[in-house]
Image 1 (cartoon, helix red, strand yellow):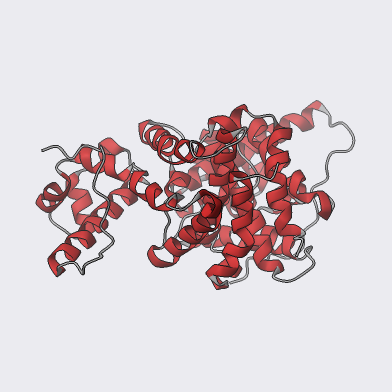
Image 2 (cartoon, helix red, strand yellow; image 1 turned 60 degrees about the horizontal axis):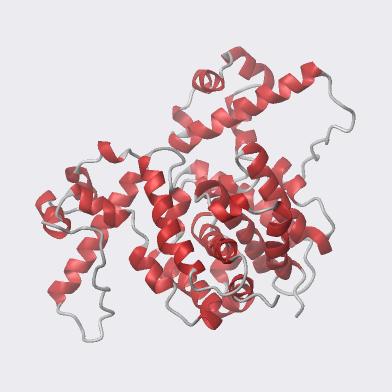
Length: 203
Length: 203
């Protein structure tokens, strides 16, 4: 099976301020992706129509086609971690633990989800889950492992990502009240070192 | 018949070898609970019949009634973390980090799931999710927080549990290959300290 986890160009971080039209387009695209994700959480890929995605997103089916080309291309985007992981991993290695903790908490607070949480919803059986798992591995854990010096880099990367996925579940699904009440810096102070210990262990 | 969710005798760890009949009963009960959990992951509580649970578990509906009394009592058991959390937390505080990591990994390897992973499947809306969240808080995170000395015990307990939930997601859902290949002691050596740092922080 070839899910093509090869290198892809990073998403441009909108250095110049975008025109209003462009911003509207981004909001609409995000709504379409969200709708597709929600439907995928409940239905098999084959059973989801573009029309159903459009209806849930509150747009027309032709608009979905305009932005994403076709259904396969839309779902390839939905099942990719590539863009999200680029932001998550965008820090020097020695500060990456804190950066990733802040990024997860900030994403939860701003968008009600975070870059990694989708993996927790991956179906245990079927193609959709297998594609998500393969993408997650290639685009998140192995990409992180490639940056880690020292022994057991693959295991350490999986453990570092495990701490972050757990943070997202505790925040977004279990809705821990202390986590919700805490200052983001206090969380990064307490949890960042636990992540960093996997990235640059003292031993 | 009252099978209420109150305190129940701990599952006897088979100090004396149990009679075959008793062991069969435990296997059957576990199959019924598993079937009910699987159905709850896909359907609303109100839409699930005892007959559907029985069918999925491969037993008769009267047998489900015999073991669990009625549908409400069955689902109270399904949505409780009480018994599982008792095992998870059963270690002295100074060794609790390693113990919990080993318990999660051993549970994943022996049963294909772990005591905490169900919270990752809690629906974001509706009664079922809210009951799971309330139980998780009372029976897992707050119970752990009660044992922690020092400041921010509630936050630290949530972060410690987050690391464990993340470990379960990475093992059981993302199926990280390095985690699957690693020795349980190697995992406990690397990850135990990250959990312990929340329980008994140096500062």
